[in-house]
Length: 566
Image (cartoon, rainbow, N blue to C red; front, side):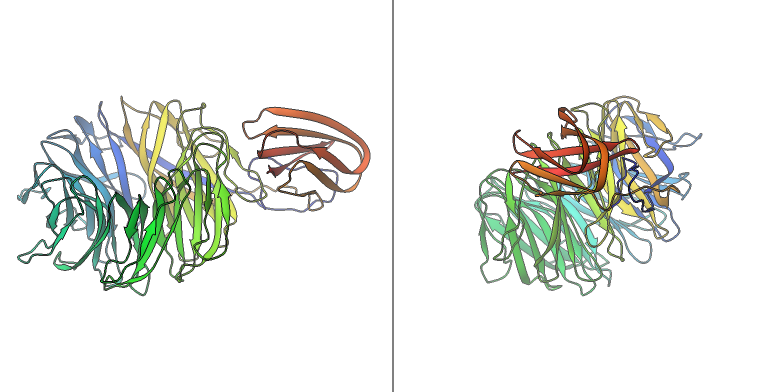
């Protein structure tokens, strides 16, 4: 396991390794003196970057020396910006009415067409060009899907809504170019945007139910499915595999029937909100569904189905959750207020592995993307000092100050091994909303920040300063070999780990003098001890259960060991 923070130097046996880090390319900021957020991002085969989000007031969307101002028609308008691989503006488009118009999902098809889903209020012209295609909500908020070509020209737009609130949360495409949209609705909604009718009705008007909608690439209705219960359920994300199957995730309360067909597959939450994942065929028929959760609130934010049929879930949990959806048990307990989980399931829904990332504060998952090789890229937010390596290694990162939100991104292998991580640490707040990969291997993050933030995850400094409340950002990183070695201690072992208190550390060889320092996850030193002429050290952890770090030092250097006390 590579240690990304601590260089391990010792007089014992050396093994050369390689440290991987992120090669900073560029960061761009755009916005007004009000609130601006980048919500979603995609790239095309040429390496151009498309970012969509919301803005208010008047802002400059040319991150270079030029000026391209847009002014919102209402509270929040939608923007779609295209940058070249060097981060230079190609064009920017605007869609908006007198109220709120917010994108939540974006995809690109094989022809370079762009599909955006979200919600809007009142009247909106969805043609960003000289033409006009006005859609009007039936009530408070309606869901929308709009298709633009690669130059940002209007192709078509559809809306879905009742007299209550209706929202699209995510959009994806299958290999044939069919469009899938998921979100929530209340009341009675006609999901057929054409001349036909396909009504769904929620159990009551005071709660939200989830929908999964399939359209053709031309926007014509194919089918719609509904998840239903007495309380709320929220679909957050969806993904398709190479066979055309559909994976939907989110969270729910009370009891929900996850079979959208004539059958019944009821699941009941353990307490507050629980996580769900379901697999549907391309016809919308249930294949399987699983739920998991604690007696508190647990959420799943994103899902991605890889080409090999495996499924990855990314979310946040509290207290103790059994992440094995089968008859066996694999429970994790949160370290702080809320921890992050990364869960891998087989195509049949069986547990492959699950990883936990957490601090003593709250930590939030935002988005993930997988490469065809099986590598996994994550982004989210941290508010304290945190070890981003869930394995035996240590990769300590911090927000700029406790309670200040920082953005992290990291990479895992298909087997769940940590590879690298980086943090954007602001002097106030920096939030992540989406992560994607380009075909040439670059990583793109988008979100919003307040104040000044350093977007270079390495030793360099690239600071951007926002104008006022929140500004939108897009940043480009690349994985590269940093070009230096780390020295490992293959003999150093600690057991039992986890422990109930007693801990033995095998140094591997006879050592004249060794110093041991025990710290908790916040970095506070609990005890220090020095041992002489020994090859083994025994300790007793008398403090509360949790995650601890044992720093082992000799004259040549140090190594950090992660220890869990039950």
